[in-house]
Image 1 (cartoon, rainbow, N blue to C red):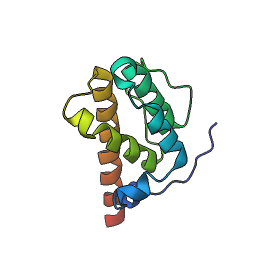
Image 2: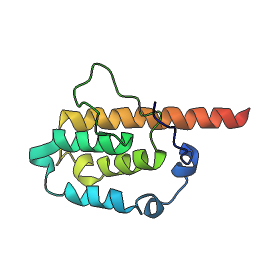
Image 3: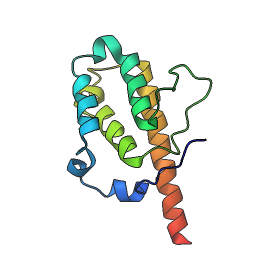
Length: 123
């Protein structure tokens, strides 16, 4: 059984400046390693992002149902979401169906977790 790691809350991460969010050496190394690889390795890059978010090398790219990012670090989710909504992806210079799937999964996790935390604070 995996030990549960305590992370910042999604609402805390949502309020952080992006400079604070991306200030992480592991993230910067991963980000740099993906430069100029998206045209030929989009599927592999998405797999590496999933592994980064989930902190595991066991994630399979082909899966019967969407992965559960519920136990993932909100900082990691925000970093990847921010990256995948950058200019190259927004303008469709970089495209691949798996990028869209990954972004949709991360967005769903993000919005659901934010709503859940806000609801919990109301009570």
